[in-house]
Length: 176
Length: 247
Image (cartoon, rainbow over the protein chains, first blue to last red):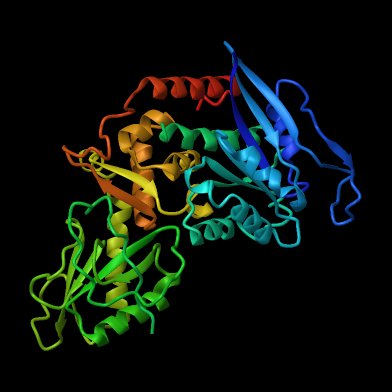
């Protein structure tokens, strides 16, 4: 019997969940992308089910990587996937019209889980869109008495994705 | 006029000291700066306090650190209007007496009334010089506590050193002792100590003292259980697989 753990990537459409999973997965991730018909999203395809990746640690151990569909109408899946996860990565696209409101949506959906959960907030496209700043996101968390890492990331860079996982592991290791 | 803000409930230097209830409550909820020093006012007149508050604001651009005027708790500078302090503060705080101009002006470490901008700023700069040159926190003191972030630090603070962001992650979920932080992060003791000190100055570090009989906080590094060992092994394997074990 294999013993798997899971890390869940959630966040706004176009934030790079699929890309982040691909950066970690042993094999190309299973994706459920379809042609995008939402004109508000600047991308050709979008995820409607979930993304799945996996990396094996040997000896029957492995880590499953799930990406939630970004669009809000799928939010019923967000919590289901995150339950019992080793960690939750929330990815926010700073180029969207109101990224802080996007972030608030995710904090609301996961409100019950977050105080006990290993979580990291990854904010993308901060170079081209410096506002809101990372400190603005930290303030948002502080207002909810939440303390978890807020990192600027470019998920096309594997090292940035690894930093997200490192932040998850750091929290997990202190909770043992 | 809002002159004050909350002091941290505890700090590295004074967590074993019980705080005296503040005589003046906080009236502003200003944003916590990345690093700040505290001026503790004890026995000063309203006029003294008002002037100091104004001087801190005017002098903000010329001072190296952000200064906060506090009325209880730990501080780097104690300004007292009486001959002996009525409040407890950090043992290594610089102490300055505020005296009437008619009194003996030859005394050292004194400011005379009415308070003037330059002499007050000179004192603040002297404290800043001392802080900048101060050695790291004594290990034997801070190893008797566990630490957790009150909030995620300002990005500018985390960019000061390469490892600060990683160290902050370890402090974000649970209270962690210095020894545990060193073992978990594989970062040098001196750097971990310096980081704790920086967080403490920023007022965002929650410090829990560890008492010998405490069953809540373990002072020994990484207490182990079979389940814990299994989990630790798993995390180690993930780190190894992803190359995160070579920090």
